[in-house]
Image (tube, rainbow, N blue to C red; front, top):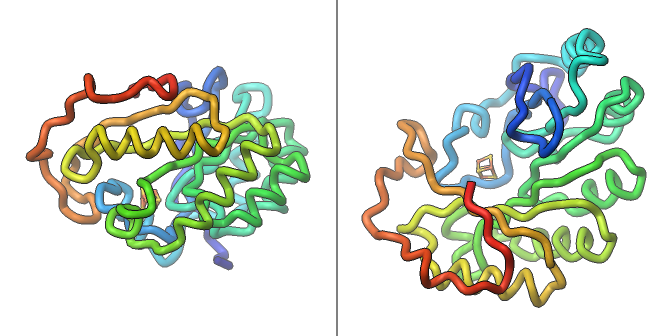
Length: 225
Ligand code: SF4
């Protein structure tokens, strides 16, 4: 996606989103998914952002020595031209974390192989049978390609899933863990509970179903956030 203003917003400071680092968050507009529970619909549907890349670099130049890292989030950051952007962020000395849904495998490969990012949070939305329904995307195979590449490359990354009990039940999470384990993933598996907001994409409210955590198998180390 070529856009003069790819950045929707910048959160100047977080110590929660980049493990072990003080970081800012760069929110890129647009997304190639439409996750039912997504509470960033304003960012997802925005045709343009509010800030240029130069606005970001001006901001970052003032944060040298104050922040350790930059989190690229959104929306889906890999819709944008991240290679030159990451090179410049690197020149300023910051570590870079990428939040991605994994659909743009080639860009993930390029970023990793050129050493332009340090850490990835990979969203695992659902197994193939529910992937399309939850995300509006038919590109499950692209997600799997990214997952397998990251495992094979030995790159530092985590996998995380948002759990809305009306969409994902313990048996779904168990099937997702099976797929992760069979693919060779051995890291922690982060689960985050759906948080009700007014403007999520499918207007989901409070879950009608409960989620019995005791039914989760111990295939991987689960960490709730
Ligand atoms: S939750 Fe889904 S729709 Fe929202 S930004 Fe992430 S991948 Fe896109």
